[in-house]
Image 1: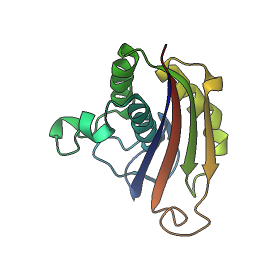
Image 2: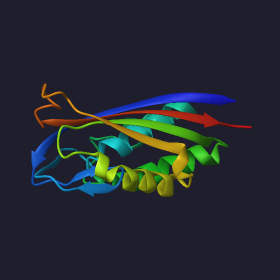
Image 3: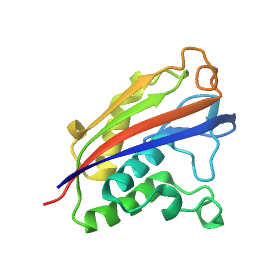
Length: 158
């Protein structure tokens, strides 16, 4: 059996926060505003995996109104989800990700981000790809007011 899931996330960029993408901190004067650490790429991956597995979405696993998840490490949230998904017999075949970010330029960090995702999910880096797009100077991404991530995940099960 194979199943596909799609994940999406958007976070406002604000001063005095870290800009995290796939567990890697990118140098920038703004970072994601979020209940957790705000890593939009990990959030979109989490939703894509949950959607493909049929186990829910990130909000049902980690409700934003629950103070327990305030400033939570998105990598730990994704690990928790993957443990549930793997326990149901699902295997990640591949992830195809898109980051929409005006600044900083993402490409110099791409390989680090891919390696971070692959290590966390215990898959090969060649099962993960991350593309970058700008907002073409159009708000909110193009004016550095926000960052977006889109992810498609393919899962299989014997």
